[in-house]
Length: 422
Image 1: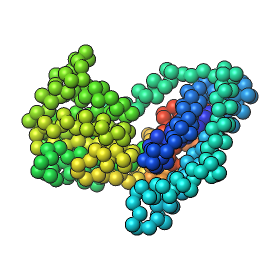
Image 2: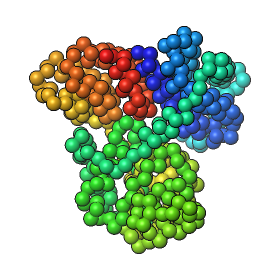
Image 3: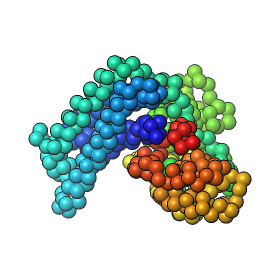
Image 4: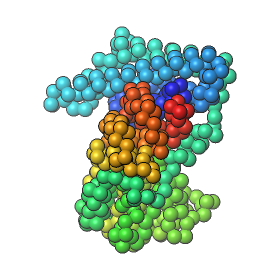
């Protein structure tokens, strides 16, 4: 399970970085304008370590020092994640216990006066983890661990999405699709607002992008809107690049050499007077200024134009929305089973394998309705009718991980799992 552990470790670091950058802890600290140096330093160290994980994973089998390095790093990452969870919990507890008349400023002050003094255990623990991580980072050069920029670029490319979808592989989203179709077809909520923004919000791996694809490709949508564009934003927040990506989806495209001003004028011209549907997939940026710079273009479209945004973060939805936000829920156990079975029982009837069905349904139950987990594990077991191997997955330490980690796992996980189980 070693390779699986390192893949999960990389995903755990991603989760931890998410909590530092966009979690309650950093937002509260910035809101009070307190020293963010400790958390920023933690972020830098984690990114530095993550860059060499692929190399460490390959060398651990022949170098026991690298194997020990990975084990120590794993312990530290989990400790750091627990620490941030504890701080967030403390912040929430103070907020709940506060008097109704207290404003946000008073609540924040109360929270930080409790856990930021020099004698506070939270601060001491941060310093301890930082010190140990600095030692870890200093050792990567001694161990001759190198970064893999190619892998990082491949990871970024793997996050890109297109509007294409195989509807036969989607389960349990008909109700959600109809709900959002209704939001698309209705008149905008405010007469002076030409464009409604509909954020689809939920944790990674829930199927936000898949749901958006189902809607985008519906024939009714083609009839309702004169222009459609699908743009995968991900962590890219540069207005010029996002504007260019939108233009490339519209008739006529754009010239790569054009300046931001030229791009914006061209987008204004394309949208003017046209009723459009724009999907902004996988939006992370919580900076309201970046959104305002983009929103200017959209106001030139015709009345009742719509923008669908998929995002993991409620803050993004709050910044962008003008219409109703749509929180996406997990799949039912039955729908999750159908998805798992489609990928696991290729070319055979599940009913012919009652022993595997029983194990498979137990696996699905542990997926907690997360389509990503059901699909990935079903694909892993595809065409394999060995009950012992199914039981290995059911009882593996995969399930010891928080479901927060699953959305950060790429398809590179599957080969590692296969090496471990076969």
